Amino acid sequence: MEKLYYGITETAELVGETPVTVRYWSNTFSKFLAPKRNAKGNRLFTSSDIELLHRIHYLTRECGLSLEAVGKKLSNKAGDGANLLEIRESLLRIRAQLEQIRSEL
Image (tube, rainbow, N blue to C red; front, side, top):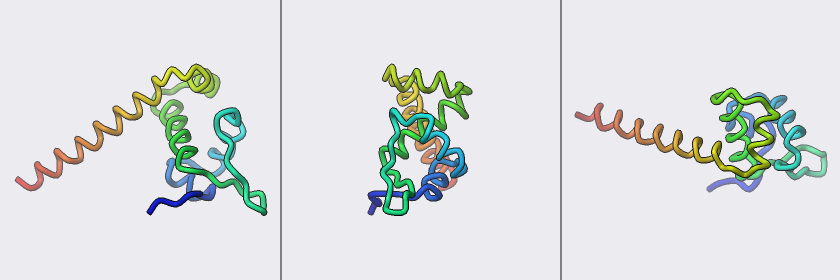
């Protein structure tokens, strides 16, 4: 069962970044990413927040876009980054399935 909220360390592990980077992106993209906070003030991320962080990770790390360019893509809601990320994830799943079939032969 999927959790409702994830702490910053857990979120960073899921995204493949450090907690410092996730915190920075949270502040930089506060227009799009506004994690809830608990009584102690710790950030709590939802699944949709993590999906957005994955998109930011993909656009910055894989596509090499600057944070300014990522912000423009997110504000334009062009969806290019999201579509590319979805396509990439689908291709990776297909590749894993093909490798599994190949190993079974």
